[in-house]
Length: 209
Image (cartoon, rainbow, N blue to C red):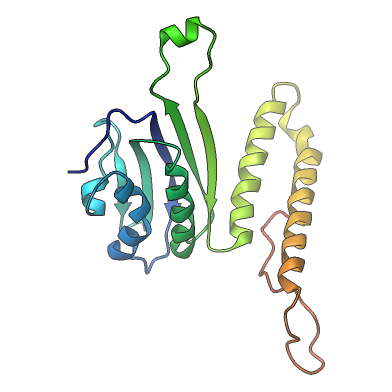
């Protein structure tokens, strides 16, 4: 079993689902998730998949649905952020579509005495995005932002009144996508004699018109 350090300053919880390509197998996934299970002191994905909390499902791979499901806690420190960077780069290669991963850092050293003294916990929250293309990542970012904004504004407005707000969000992401594509085009050689120019970044995310 993986070894957990109870003296770590943080409990780190990783949560999210990632739809994988149909051709992705267990060995590929084990290699992609190496930053997580290695951090937990495990020798394999099977060894490191259980969460420190038994009631959490940990890291699960549904081969039939090609779905990676993570609800996993590990003790750690700030250096875990480097593992997250490596994880995202690896999952980008396996993801079928864009997905979000929520990472929460809970300060285990913060106690009632700290609270009474007016000190603040070092808790932190990070939202990470993975996907096969920049467009796929922007799509899930857009969808989450729309969900958050609409949920907030529906306290004051009917949902049918918010079409303009959603359109403005789409415009912002559309502009960002176009800038990304244009930056990728810089320095690219022409396609061929007389070939027309074009975007090399692939199709725009849906809704971003």
